[in-house]
Length: 80
Image (cartoon, rainbow, N blue to C red; front, top):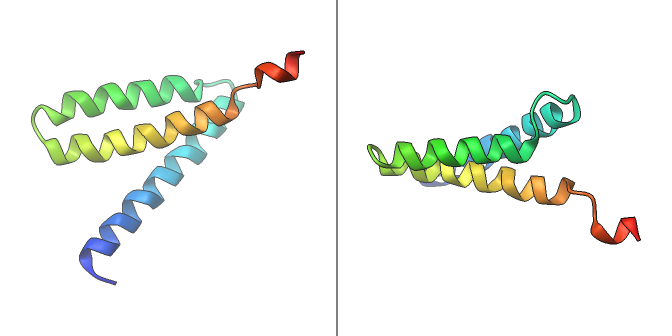
């Protein structure tokens, strides 16, 4: 595995770990996963001002959490 492949694997693994942690916090009523995603997205934006690479990585992780939040939302059709 090259260094670049390892970096990509590490980014995906960390994103998955954040998704698991966010889901557990959401289920336990500690923090909703969409709030966790939004906070991380804000942190990504602020971080990008001084370190663009860091902001991109944090933004990637925030987007993973946002996708999980959408998947966890109850379906509107389930209410009909």
